[in-house]
Image 1 (cartoon, rainbow, N blue to C red):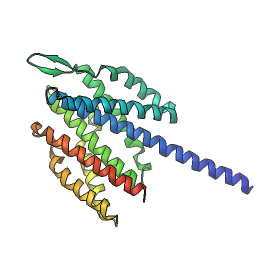
Image 2 (image 1 turned 45 degrees about the vertical axis):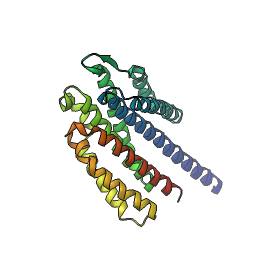
Image 3 (image 1 turned 180 degrees about the vertical axis):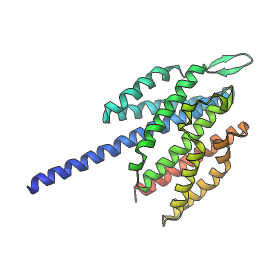
Image 4 (image 1 turned 90 degrees about the vertical axis):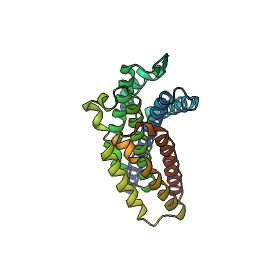
Length: 247
């Protein structure tokens, strides 16, 4: 009887471990898609700066790898994602038009935006299972990247916020910012290592520079500031995540 209970307990632990890894793979895929979107639209906003082309191509490649990892862990959940991903990923290219610059077809923009909506919805449904400190930091990094991706999407769109539909409000930047601030304050109250505390203080300072831009979509000319600071914030959170995971 004890042997049977031992086997049952082991199976439960293995199942929980597999779920944790699946969540991580999906989170990493969503992070990469968000980063790719920010860089993709920055390429347009900077009128073809090759730095951002390099960035979005790398992030798209990373997203592909993470989706493949998620597919191996949960093929059922990944099937629909892969279908949507394969439909538009190869078309994420710009056409240069004299007098108009680097443009992207509206339908392709909508598909890209819809895909991020779907990913963020899935992450939101399972985020409660990611409860430890390192995973809290991962979710904070995800929030920054998703909010920034939506900001660059709107900043580069011809009609700005008017192009946002009711379906797109699943990414509610003000609500996400509120949750981000609550998580940040909660973590800052904990007795964490000096390095992590220092990183969190830097995150708070840099977030203060861009919060209004990525939540209220004011001052589109601030996109360079947003891109730089969101990159720095993500690096700081990733460093802190590694420190906590290794503690």
